[in-house]
Length: 271
Ligand code: AMP
Image 1 (tube, protein in one colour):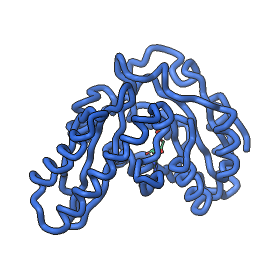
Image 2 (image 1 turned 90 degrees about the vertical axis):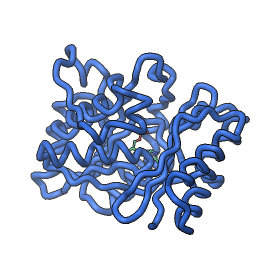
Image 3 (image 1 turned 45 degrees about the vertical axis):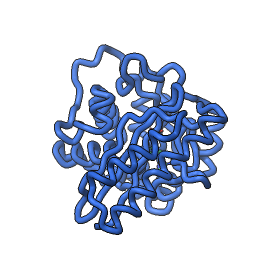
Image 4 (image 1 turned 90 degrees about the horizontal axis):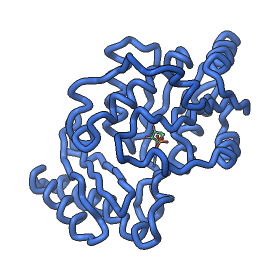
């Protein structure tokens, strides 16, 4: 696995791979890798000739007072894990490499970015869309792997690709969970032991909600059930619980804070 720090180096390396007939699988991350990230890389390795992983803790997508400075990082460990999972290239740009000047241009995806995470983090998705647009422009034509863990982010990226004609095929991948149901997240490492134990309430509430909606309980009542299940955990501070229509079924989503750590999760449900 080759570690690359410059945009030009990354662009040229991937161009050479495409020229020699190897399609690119791109896996954008913020690092502190866990089994969720590795599942995206392993899938990319099966489906693409070359796997390119990016690790960049993107300041643009963090609001004032959010956890940019305390976001967990361990590049040495990430290098080993990415290589084991099949990465051929690891792009690890510094902030000054990605943003050498003030950003006067941003990409924002209207409507899809509203509500849910967008209500709690008003500048978040413009930061995400802008950095993903840059990564796509640097990487060139590729398949790009994103987790359903960040369900609204996946919708934002899909819509950006459609609206701006990026030569990118977006691949959504299922959520990888801990044995107690907690969705894997780099932020889980920052939970205190008591909060870590309490945090499984989020997935438990969503699974309970899924069972209810699949037996015919209405979405408003299911939303209240998910919210009250999470709110009943004294260590949890609920941001939102929502039930939205998705195709012919439903998507149940929740966000809650445990101490200084904010966690999100979601599940799909049949109609
Ligand atoms: P992050 O480093 O948190 O920005 O995540 C990078 C990518 O990994 C995003 O596409 C996430 O949706 C995905 N991801 C994060 N956690 C999980 C998980 N538990 N299961 C599957 N994908 C995940």
